[in-house]
Length: 350
Image (cartoon, rainbow, N blue to C red):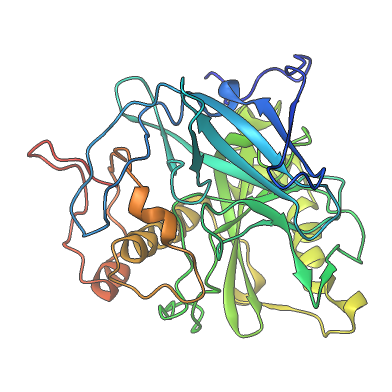
């Protein structure tokens, strides 16, 4: 399958540096990212469309998609976002949380089995980048605490870390298997491929399994996945394959999350599910639950607690054909109809 990104040895166009209006000399760097996002966002366009629970219509985007860096790296103001530039140079911000489809589809609109992964923290790095869920447009920023930029004091992370778009771990939904609610963030992903994925890049991945970290009394699920273009991807289809071909990887990921806060003077983290890394089928259910929760969030069926939904007034969501109904307990939690699948009347669903 075609990758979302250009080959590693393909050099991107030279960045375009545009001074800010206030002439603070903080640059806006724009790099053409059409090879990364054009295909997956080809049916997404932003326009006024108040979120009232009705199903939006598909619209085709004709602009140029670019990755935009605003401000200077290693500052509190630094942001990375994806924007669409129209022929008239009008800029529309694309949220990597809300606008990017979760499930990958082919040219016929059928699911391929892969999911879109947004990388926040590249492998072999330690700056704690994350999607700003509380800011309009949800750019990626470096996390901060008390005015200080955060890094992993434990050291470099050894996998690509990010999240799935259009997912949300609902704090009010107490998962029956772990007994606690979600952490109010998109669903986290640990991508174990060889390639170092840059911050804000989107890759298509295969789901392999899931760990459940219990962080400050909240469920913080960690999906284990691999880039579908990785050399190991054809041989890895479930956790049994990972343990057989890449022994020790899951245990090392588990220990990373158990101890990464210790250098900050905090106790070790704990895990739910008896610390087991659950198989692919279970992980897919977790994804479906979090996707269903996200639907409730963006249609205002669930309150947005410290989350920015300003950009949702401009959101037109593309079709997300479904062949798998979410687990019954999640459907009951959101009063969703059983068999949440394709609209037989031809309507567009999330």
